[in-house]
Image 1 (cartoon, rainbow, N blue to C red):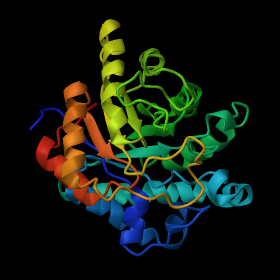
Image 2: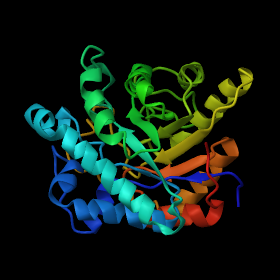
Image 3: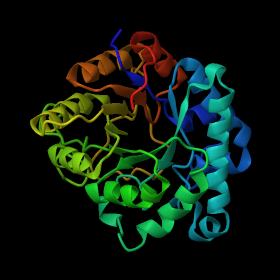
Image 4: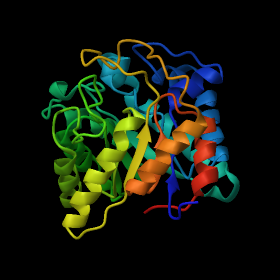
Length: 307
């Protein structure tokens, strides 16, 4: 067992399907929130039972990119409240009530789309999610962010709530990327630059998610080097996906991505041990990483809570 490891939950979408919800584009996981909210809560409950100490609200797809501008304006706030309430109910009903709720703040202009980021519009969208989720969450999680400016937008959007914010970047894991080479965000910015920004911004944690597990250890090592050189402390974490490798031209939201059948809970745990050896102390899973994987992590690492 590695001491002091916080266990996150895993990916929401495939677990929704496993429990009987429909998953399709463009609504993606928001469809279950709209049509089958009871299944969303069950997914949260199963991740908590598997050992997750932090669960994340099902608000990733609550943006115009997925549900459309008109529906976002008409229903976005109410859906964000529903996402927060379902996660809060699951956390509070768990034995001991020990699970914390992270409010998911996604890349509002689309996953893996750093060029689509629009600083003039981002707060208009994030403010709706923050207002709806704020009564229910313990911390904020800006996740699958492709560039540092998206992290800065999350900081701005959540500042007035007084709750800690965690930032999680997705890495360039395309066909030309080297898992052992210098780690970069999908924008091309270096992990060292991202870690330096996170320190100065006052992030509660810096994580890497929604990239292949082979690419994560190098990112953690480089982030840890930056943090150590600054003489500071910053919790680091990883939650990888189970997607098959894709060409650089692939767009994240084109359809249902194939997942790697060989990425069993046992193999995922082997990767997680590499991440903790590199300095990660927050571990979970992203797309395609399910309840079984999280159970394996919790058994191996225990459930100590990070700040």
